[in-house]
Image (cartoon, rainbow, N blue to C red; front, side):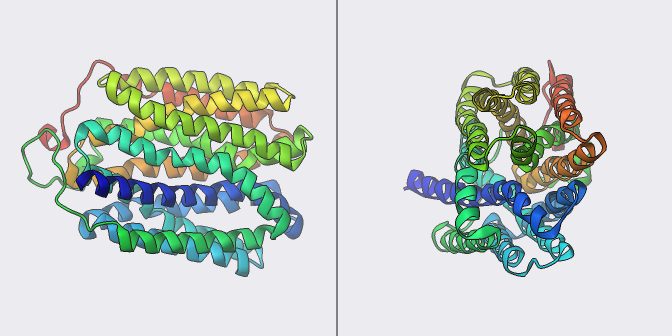
Length: 401
């Protein structure tokens, strides 16, 4: 019975995660018709994507507090409901550039609660040795969304337009929110980590934890190429490499496939064989991803670009999953929502910086070379910043006080 309950919960959270990621994937392709309709400049297109992550960043820590205070189920449902509502508004009511920015900002506010509440749900329902794999299943939804998302996005853009695409996405989010409300059991008492102590930990103490600081920086750097490519790769392939929109969607889907495979395999591999050696996984995979991202720019072949993007996302996602699941092994369960909110704020800030910075780089350099140099550099930094964890075992925050 417990296995069935956990499986149902993971399945529904996975579908919700997929909807969340598809929303972010579709935006990259929708920028093409939006650019034509509103005659926007590259930096303005960057703001449409970036403002979503600005709101996401601002509301990450409050969302983590809400999880610890009211439980993950309420936050899950509210998050999907708000995301769906503002996606519909973006499609139906986004009649000016200002309104587009407003609705993407509000959608980012809604989305802020979903990752932290999923992490809280995993921590509360799985023992520590199963958390990496359980969370990796949820994170693999990004790969599914980026595999199917580009194909679905191009089909929907051609048949119902970008406005209809976002309206349909909003309806799907409403449906999944209702299913979670109806089928996911209410939060139960969290499973403890190895420490037997249960006294509360001040949130400000989390900000002083070395592992929280290092993971904040690492996930910030990892999300810059992740969301930067999601936002700008379709335009790069269509406008700079001259590929048809349909072919560019296949290239992007190859990256999503790599992300999907990597998410599942990394969770199993790291959980089983690399406990205590996570810094080696992050460093090596980040450096390999940097090489592959550089090769995506260097090639003019759609097939080669697909191959390099595939492996680039395989290594990038391996680093991301390892970084994202480390707090579940090292920090107390009763502050997991707040801890994940702080750490994931680094990731969302990366998502905010990436599309805007890349937009300005494209405009200033009149090309994409500088943007890819930017992506390669931050991937290298994400691998190096994790090295201080080598040879050290951080005690839970409350023990280090």
